[in-house]
Image (cartoon, rainbow, N blue to C red; front, side):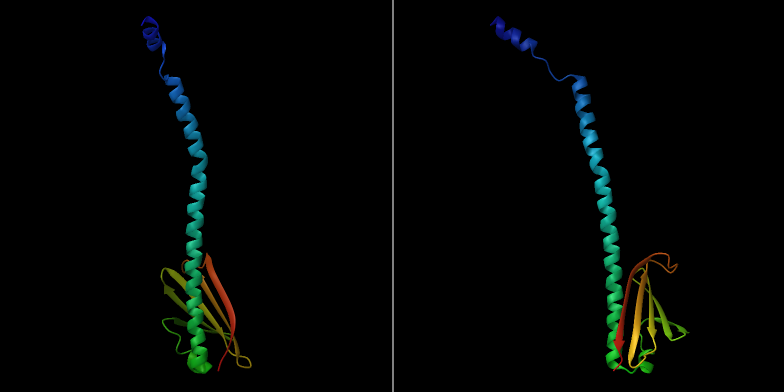
Length: 142
């Protein structure tokens, strides 16, 4: 009985130093993973913004393609939907539009032998500091 009582009394619990050491180790492990998670969130946000801008540029391109199959060039430049005509510079017709928080710039070149360059640029805002997406193609006016 005495040995049993002695054994119970001699068992020690966790000391304060052991608790502080385990918390310190756990904190160091967690702190190494936090930058990885924040970088992952930034990358996801950037990818989402680029994907949205690419979708806007693609839909603008599809609208212009529809115009190339529906109207002759002279009529088509009058039918660009929801875009503001800014004027003609050299051979390029310039349009802009604010859509879904983006600034869209459309440049359509006068056709040369029925072929016309089309350029769409999507910016994050009208300051044009950050180009988010750009598409360029050549369309045949029918």
